Length: 450
Image: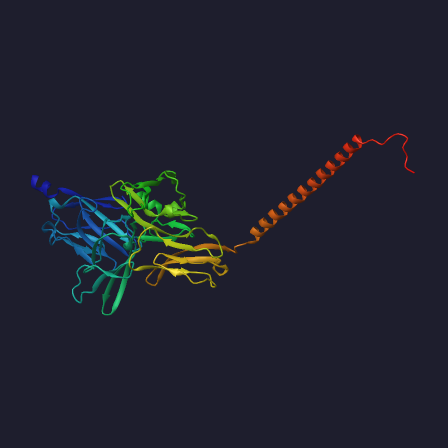
């Protein structure tokens, strides 16, 4: 009786889908059982795991006919597939437990976002194909062929963000299977940004295209900051850079920590973290660093050196005919060998003496009046330019003539007033003398002239 009961002992296999649905199957030791997915869409990739989700993979199958099985000795010769159903032959006691069924559709290829520096692993396989094994490879978002035998294992970078295609090629025919890869990273920026005191300034920092702020938050962003290390007169930068801005991650507003005229563009939700200014100054020369720090200790950052070109006129920009003027053009440091300065002048300008970083006009004239320019070139590319306006006046300008004439008129008026004053004073003196004479010599009484 005990043997009869033992032979009828039922064991339980539990099927759990990734959606949370669960089903219990009762089977007898030594029996063949079939585990069916509870539900799945067409064109699916079906994966069977044992004991835990994403645990030991027993088998997989896709809608293209590809499939594969575990190489574990415990499951050897026990597994097969009927469609997407997993068949276990001669079920033994040690093989009872919980089975997980994971289903992904062709349209659901997007994995969770990766942080730049994370491991990016892509595998494309059709399982065992008896004859004429097709060629399998990956095509990156830049259109480059990547991987070896359908496998890509690299460190994720910004250029890996976007659509990857698994290409299956056989007998001249090929079929592509797209996979979306999201890499949270900052867009690349140039190492140097060239501008001038005659131009606006925008220091770029932004997320790479298609990456949203919500995806950044999923990676547990901890802080976003801007730092600035000014360019010293020695050409070096200080050891401790100055913090310009820090981002309030809850309000998504910037806190200003230094006043240098720069302002954030305030398109944070669009991933734009750039700084801008209407006109650059020489005080803006230096190194700017935009950084994003995450809770796992990793930091993403971009660094750009701002180079500001400036023209200076000595002794000044307002001159008179015949004066000498020196125009110097500089970025504040010595230019590399592959860079040079080109000067532009008014069409009617007189000849000038040219030096590597400045020019001299020995005697300016009317023809030198107008805009003078300095261009910074590297190879065949103009990096930036600056302009300065010279105002050349004659030796006796209109205003000087007005001033001289006015002074002459005033002097003449003073002379006239002095003359009038003198005449009046002289007349008064004569009248006074005449009266005095009459008092001293009065006429005799009774004396009449006949």
